[in-house]
Image 1: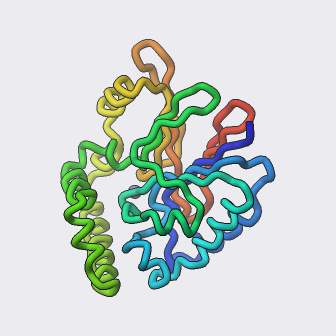
Image 2: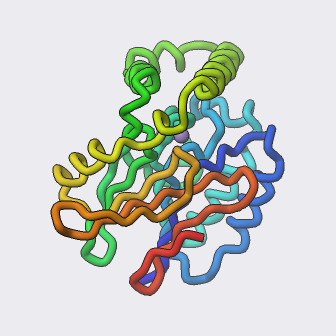
Length: 238
Ligand code: MN
């Protein structure tokens, strides 16, 4: 089996040229053994609709994704809380397969639960409330019907609001809720979860009903690449 990579929280934006350069370098220098890449959300710092990619200066990133998918790497895109408006046009342009959050995949016979991660942060009630509004088709339709400039204004305002409210919240409130996670893992019959969002890269091992369970947390790309690789039967977080 070819290697599988998992990345998230690149927060690609013209405002962070370092991350853009690192992603370009990553995509053009991939090891030859990569068969699949799962993008687990917040790849873009924000997204205002597939017709707004040019406005955000994301043409080049789409080209890099297209280059990877054309070279035979299977790309899957699961949206985050910043780029949840990525849609079919983006998928067609880049060759990414869109996955819903959460999704369960099979790797060598093991069920793996993939999620961006913010849905697991149930202690942050304000975020969960905002999340259900932004994910509603009513809000999304009204937003996408607006002119691109208005959408850009709204997106920047929402981003600022989210940054401000994060400052006021304790770290623990913005992390995942362990008992909620365990409930989900039981219901979904999984022992392995991979997510991003919290920007706290780690491998958490814990006991789940007498069996060993693992939660891999991907890091952000603000200062370095964070990649989880499945290769030769094991996961390695780099
Ligand atoms: Mn996020």
